[in-house]
Amino acid sequence: MIIVDTHCHAGLNKYEPIETLLYHMQQSGVDRAVLIQHQGTTDNSYHVECLGAHPDQLASAMIVESTDDGERMRYWADQGLVGIRLSANSRAEAADPLVQWRTAAELNLVVSAPSSPSTLLSDEFAEVVSLFPDLQIVIEHLGGVGTDAVPPYDEFKRALALAKHPNLTIKLPGFGEFCNLPYPFEDVPPFARMVVEAFGPQRVMWGSDFPPVSSREGYHHSLQFPIDHFSDLSEEEREWIFGRTALSVWQFPGP
Image (cartoon, rainbow, N blue to C red; front, side, top):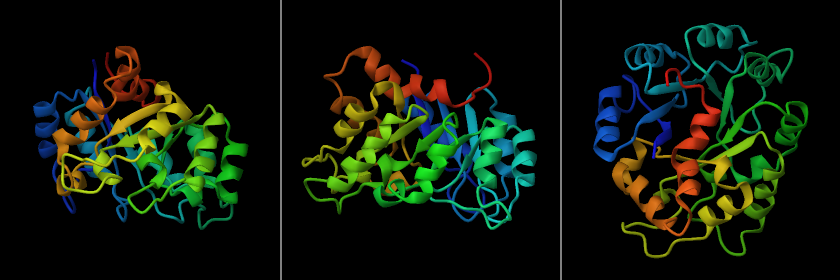
């Protein structure tokens, strides 16, 4: 199956250069990746360089200044970036606080949304979902649920009810984000199963969180463990989670 990593970071001022990511992808059989700009960086020029060097393998989501009225979003979109990173409750410091969401919808950008269960349940996110029903919004990091969540996970369950909105998809990270180390994980909370049940495989996409994942279970295990975890699913269902959902949402060039 085609495997797409939908949550990677690459940079020269932080994290690792693109060649390091491509090495890990090759070693683990990952075909394509989405570069998600890391927090604190609004100069997306390195992503543009990476896209130019590897146009068939990569897509990218930008970050812009909180004061941007859409001008910089248009600039970076013209350079080939197909997404933007906006937190679930994001508001611009501009005359129109929703201008960045509005511009994303106008430019047909994919929004990669950092979140927590509480921000997903916020009035701010409810307004976005109501106003932009056709905007592709990808919820990052399994909705922000982590090792501190305790049964019966009521807040997380309420957040998963957002799956009723067809324009929302969600990222399945390496399990080290919500399982206690060391690897291999022995006590696995039901979060991944809950997400697949709520959204369905066609709206779930895997993302490693490279390179931070290297301090948890490591790149290869971040892929192999969830593949093994979902071995009871059909081949087609796993194809959606580990590649086809991403290909249906992110605008990769080429075949």
